[in-house]
Image (cartoon, rainbow, N blue to C red; front, top):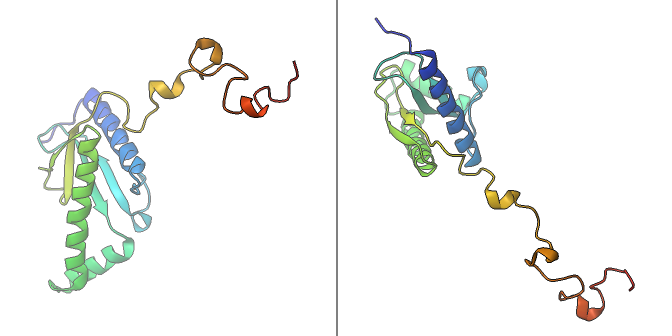
Length: 173
């Protein structure tokens, strides 16, 4: 019988899943909103498994457009293994999972083959970076602006516009 993961483990998985979604959106990929009606969803789908086993954790897969998925299901129902939609879906899934893997590895995540038989065509993300997101605000961005009195820029009236009489910005002295 499968045991549920502890609340601490689930919370860590949820943290990783949220970071994964953020990084994929930052890279420009659409991400499926959890709880969205499946017939409307497409893009990277990030899920959290709440069980305590080797296959549990954070999974990332790709949902093609509802139209392509509908064609694929219909071809499978009719046992049409050479249907162009099936072949195209295989290429799409492989390509998108490769792209998702590359994006997440670049952002500091560990990504590996998913061992969960109930989550085919997905990758597993067991760990993520502890520091901020790749696109997060850096210290340099929040530093106070440079003032000439700090010695990090030209003094008023000494910049390139000062030669043309524009350095005083309309203030007469």
